Amino acid sequence: MALQKREDVKEVDKWDLTPMYTSYEDWEKDIQKVTESVKEVAAFKGRIMESSSTLYEFYLAYDKMNRISDLVYLYARLLCDGDTTNSEYQKMKSRVEKMMEDISTELSFVSSEMLSADYSTILEYIKENPKLEEFAFDLEKMFRYKDHTLSEKEEEIITKASNAFGTGDEVFYNFDNADIHLGEITNEDGELEEVTNSNYIKLMNSKNRQVRKDAFEHMYHYFESFKNTISSAYKGQIKEDFFMSDIRKYPNPLEMSLYRDSIDSSVYKNLISTVHDNLGAMYDYMALRKKVLGLDEMHMYDVYVDIVDATPADIPFEEGKKILFEALKPLGDTYLSDLQKAFDERWIDKYPNVGKKSGAYSWGSFDTYPYLLLNYNGTVDSVSTMGHELGHSMHSYYSNKYQNSMNANYPIFLAEIASTVNEVLINDYLYKNAKTKKEKMLYLTEFLDKVRTTIYRQTMFAEFEMIMHDKYEQNIPITEEELSSTYYDLNKLYYGDNMISDDLIRYEWLRIPHFYTPFYVYKYATGLSSAIAIASDILKGKEGAKEAYLEFLRSGCSDYPLNILKKAGVDMTTPEPISKAITMFEEKLKELKELI
Image (tube, rainbow, N blue to C red; front, top):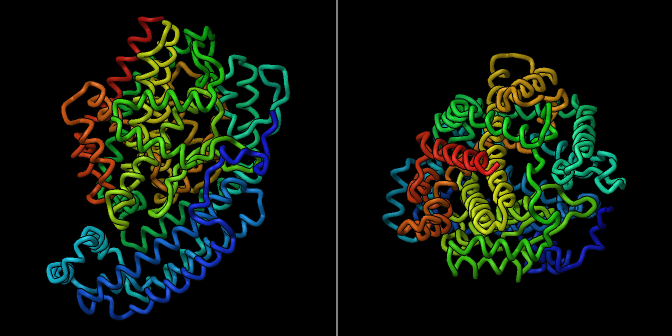
């Protein structure tokens, strides 16, 4: 079935952006307000640290500017993501991106000027002016960067240079969304169907092996044909990473990335080593899949197909919503009542359309709804994705409600916990309410596949990033062959001898957008590990577990991530949460074997 054009999608199925702006003219007026607010902030140059009252007034002006600029930026980006082929939206997107670059350049003096003072002065100001207390943690986090901040003139140069960065990400964004054309294959019904980013996993879950094989080959032959272009884009990203880490005086890009969350690199490396120690469980699962599917050889296009077929092929959106609310009942009535707002207030853009950004995300600002972009396609996986993104949105909703604007924007390290708690609860509900043995098997495999894709696969991505950055640091040429061969070898290691690592899988890395946000994907793996621990306590009715989790959601970024997580009973400085998750993986694998 052909995708709808954006203008043909029902309003009720699209997000409602009118609480932000009702017209282009209103948006334009706020663009002008951004210009004025930037001038107000710039007027503090040279006197931010004059007194406690001046520092407080600066913070108010800076906060006001950030909130309005976030609003106009978000609006343009959401419009564009809804239809990347719309030239007017593209212009709006380009305009706000340039606006944010200009703001960054004009206000590049802020951090260096503030950091020219001693932190002891900040503490004295807070004592002198209690109103500064609401900005205390933000100031503490800022002064951690004192050793990584240069002079005002140097900061200005770096900011101007930074405006030229991000080209690799932009090239990939347009290539993967606006320009991509994967061709058509014959689907299960014998009809021609265009392969898209949105329906790829659905095609890979087809019971017809030829459909899976054709979709796989269409996807990766397409990326293979552009392998040198995308390799150049990613190599540019790696160069950018090293430039910034060097100029900012970090040991390497990994350390720079982790510094923001006050996380030691041992947490990242511990994830990889713990998963390596437990690859046997992954190999056992691949062997079981091969046996159940009755395959002499299991290829990479066989890893997504359900090994049992015990649910309807299509779950309408409203039915998916019903499942979601039942599954999340353990979180309590208050959570469910607030969750209903996402549907009543139309936070959600539901279905794929021509030109719509692929995948799914939750994104908002302090003064807006936490919007969701979905490409709902009626599978169990799309129900889980909806729950995942709503986990993000509810985290944002509670953080914005209980924290000020400076302490509301929680880091990604914590974000993936809220989303995956929902996924674990949804899976548990479906498993417990399964009416047949085959259904139980289906939901067991769904959990196993979630661990496979989120802990094992995302850790493989994380290791790929680390290896390629290490090779660049060792002056090993980052060619397409080096990138693709490294990825292919990792794929063989993580999937084991029970899989045929088809040659085309070497090009899978080419289609991973997260590689343009360096050292990001490991947070999916740590997030699921943490989520399994939290959800397990809630489901078992552990005293105080639900309340501790809701307090976690309300905490925003009011403390460092590992500290907030410890309050919820999870310590990611140890292998324990990852080992617990893999232990549950092994237990469910054992149960699946017994059912089979």
